[in-house]
Image 1 (tube, rainbow, N blue to C red):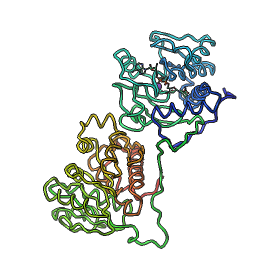
Image 2: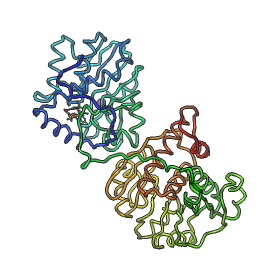
Image 3: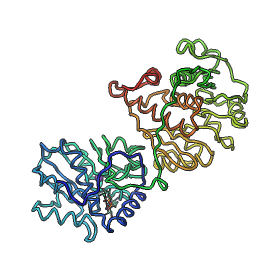
Length: 481
Ligand SMILES: NC(=O)C1=CN([C@@H]2O[C@H](COP(=O)(O)OP(=O)(O)OC[C@H]3O[C@@H](n4cnc5c(N)ncnc54)[C@H](O)[C@@H]3O)[C@@H](O)[C@H]2O)[C@@H](O)CC1
Ligand SMILES: [K+]
């Protein structure tokens, strides 16, 4: 099955590219390889078969192909499986690809094997469905006929494996348009697509894998995921070297938020954590985390080297507003603005240069003056718009959390649906604050914090149905297994 002309695959990459950038990367590759993208399609099909062969080899396979090059991948995959002796049926609901595109050549090569291509739903039962209807070229909402095909594929009692992107999923935003394939696994090519990592993407993709197909992309013009090590601890270290985190919140019946945030800041390595909560919650805070110091009530805003985590359970009254205002106007202040802190930010027209803002979708919508569904459908744009407006690092929470700065965007570990539990945001804010206190730059603290939080939750979700913020706090100090 090896092909002489195929580029050598590079399995690991951190690159996340929009569909337009992927197209550019393909063209750029072709310009340097005789003007031909056909070897890439072959490499994609070979990689897909290699990746999925153990799953499909013992049963029968239905390949559903579209008219574009995602369908072309499907024709090539069908030919390779057929030649490997796997029973394959090919279904092309929209007809043949136009002559001149790689997909047409893929169809011609398939036809040479004698394998028929069906225009109607085949009646045979199958063990695996390979989804090659649409990939990164999906560019408009699906019409009812297409919706029906995707829904029927989702209802098949067979597992669905998606080629490049689950069909119906917007490769840039992670939104179904309005429905998308729910795949058991998705094998992507060239670079990660934003839409597979955020919003509904992770749910639609199932197990996600990537083969760059040897396309080496210049990192200057694309977003790059950065992974940083957690702060190291030397043999001579002292807690004073790991910084102070002041948690301002825990008022008006919301003591738990600040208890969680203080606990996660401790668990993420802050040298000293001071909770400025309502006096009523001091006992509870100390019962949960005796390592925390308490200074009840709202603090004086002092300009020292501390990191301030302002917002978890802070409340929406005038005193809370004044507290947020003072922090943001205090020269050189730095920290994390979360929850009610973000509520008050909406009334303050002030840059947050040394701050990490951690809105969820609703908070982001309020800050931008958008509807929530506009944020949901445009997460990368929303995150970057907030970063520009506030000159801050913005963590747009939700499935597939994004970290935006004024100059770029990072897609983080998708975590797990089991983490959709109360207090999870407070927990994340505490982790990011602790990393700031340990001298990570705001962008690095945000990216490392989100990835650490998401990976910890994901790991716990392998053995429990739900993951609570308290579970994360207990797991953070542990080493990875
Ligand atoms: N040519 C190349 O160099 C490579 C292409 N690759 C594959 O090619 C895919 C991208 O191919 P294309 O750009 O042709 O795009 P797609 O195959 O994803 O989709 C484009 C086709 O779908 C139609 N379409 C788009 N939205 C629609 C809608 N809502 N309803 C109905 N029809 C719709 C378009 O008119 C077009 O016919 C990738 O996802 C990947 O699978 C890979 O083979 C890697 C190399
Ligand atoms: K697909």
